[in-house]
Image 1: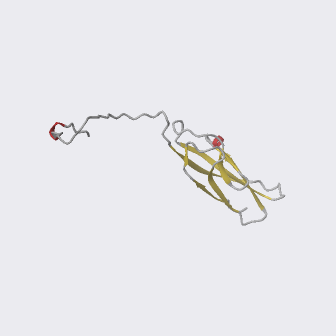
Image 2: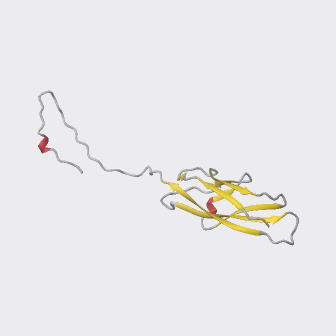
Image 3: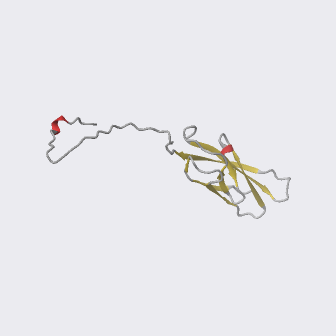
Length: 134
């Protein structure tokens, strides 16, 4: 039986990406018309993904950067000869990682100070009295 050649192209994804977003593409090189290759997803974070019949990898769950910054899973490619159950299938795992890009939450706060004062044409300033900020 020939070797399984599989390429996974994964894109980083924003944490607010919608379920159903394409996050990767899978290419299987199968030069033997007698072979049938089946793809499945395995691994710790496999429940975040689903495979389409078009060999796209789709997001199946919402993401939260504060929970997980990277998702890790594997594509299992199993090749079997069409119509011949006497030859056992051959499987190989292809690992991948998906990086989640953080989007600041609406409740993120920044501290700053604002000073308001009146200035007219007769106002002068002594710059030596201004505090420096580093």
